[in-house]
Image (cartoon, rainbow, N blue to C red; front, side, top):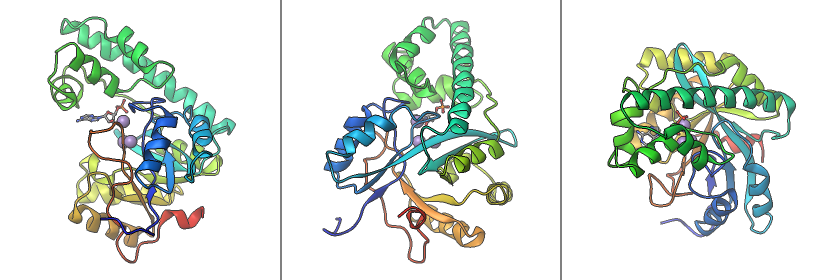
Length: 280
Ligand code: AMP
Ligand code: MN
Ligand code: MN
Ligand code: MN
């Protein structure tokens, strides 16, 4: 149960500008219905939804924080870095986004080619149509595979075809971590590591990653995500203490009735330094 006066932050969610099911306007409306006060729209490698979200937020009391979730390569791994409070019209950021978009487009063609080898045809045209002007993600391929009965559900599409090491997996070189953090900082934003426990890093790799991230000027880490349990929160809270990082929270909402709802998040642990201290 949420208490009446609690201020609710949700600093990670998606719209149709990338792989979310709702338009930016619908995301803002839904966040408002769910009691969110401060919302960051953080689509994958794009800021295209932000203008619309800002306009929609003017009709509610929501404070809309411009954000992005950038894919970054580091030591042959893919990390997701959230930029919060970015200027969505900053030329350095826009140039970075354009290069990520090209990478996504090339990758989509390669994924479709690999699916053809499995005798699954038409994937590229289908994902291009379903992404409309938005970023093509593996979620679009997963939806295509489910729709055409090659997979039971989205998870099954990843397990069968799209996940790491599966037949349609394409290893991808994204912009490297220093560049991604630099774009965020130059555009006035704060760099935050998204869902830090989802990269399957050993303790040693986790420490290496957090060291590199902080040395490059990264300032925050998601302590509470849509799917964190108490142990996850405790563990991530310790990283904030150890590496002097600000704590963020976000649902990673993509669609109604899937994964997790907007604003439905556990509290930050006592003693956290919330990332919004930096932009309040
Ligand atoms: P991409 O950035 O194009 O590689 O796509 C990653 C997106 O795919 C994530 O942001 C999730 O929305 C989605 N995704 C990744 N793994 C899974 C999974 N196992 N089940 C469902 N969706 C997934
Ligand atoms: Mn996604
Ligand atoms: Mn992510
Ligand atoms: Mn996300």
